[in-house]
Amino acid sequence: MSGQESASYVVSPSLDGDQAVIFVPGLGGRTKFVDRWNEPGREPVIRRAGWSEPMSVPSVDVRGAALASLIADSGATEVVLVGHSMGALVCLEAARHLERQLRGIVVMCQYPPHRTPVSPLADLPDRALAEEIEAPPHILDTVALPEYARLWRSEYRLLNRYLESDPRPVLNAPIVAVGARDDASSWDTECLDDWSRYTTEWLSVHLIDGGHQIVEELPAETLREWVRKVRG
Image (cartoon, rainbow, N blue to C red; front, top):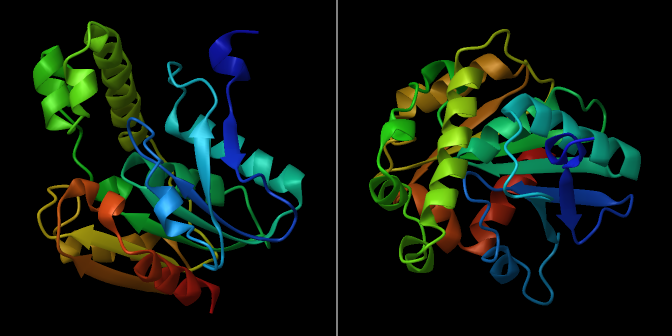
C-alpha cells in the first residue's frame, strides 16, 4: 500500500464519543494557533485534524471521506466541522458522508465550489508561490523550498480538479460562511450567499476584517459563537 493510500487524518485531542468540534486547515496545514482557542476553561475543545503524511497529496474528496470515516468509527456525536480555505471544501466532502452525527459546518475564507475560480498559482515559480500563499519565513529561506513548492503545486492541481467536478453534496445541516474583507477568496458576500445551494437547512454569512490568514488571529469566543449558532 502506498503512502498516499495509507495516509489519513489524525484528530487531536482524539475523539472520545462526545460532542466534537473539529478544525480542518487549508493548504500547508498550519494548526498551532488552535492552542490559543483552547485556553483552560474554554468549552467546547476545538480539535485539530492534521493529515498524517503531509507530503502526500490525496484529492479533496478522498480527504473528506477519510475524515468522515474517522468520525464515524469514533462514535462522536453532535459534530461541528470548521474548515479554513481548502479545508472548508474537505469539510463539505466529509459532511456528505455523515448523517445524524453532523450538526453543521463553519467555512472560512472559501467561496462555494461553483463560485471558486480555477487557481493559476500552480504555475508560479517556487518563491513567488511561497510568497503568494504567505508561507512562513523559515520555509521561504530553506533549501527545502522546491519540495514544499512541489507539494503546493500538487495540491492546487488537485483543488482545480475538484472545482471542475460534479455533482456537489447538499447537506441536511446548517452552514455558517465567513469571509474576510481583504481576502480575494472570500470578500464578496454575494458569492458567500451561494453556499445556500449546499444545504437544505439555513445559511448564515459573516464578513470580518482581515486577509486570508485571519483564522490565525480569530478570537476564540468569535469561533465558539459560530459553533453555538450551528448547534442551535
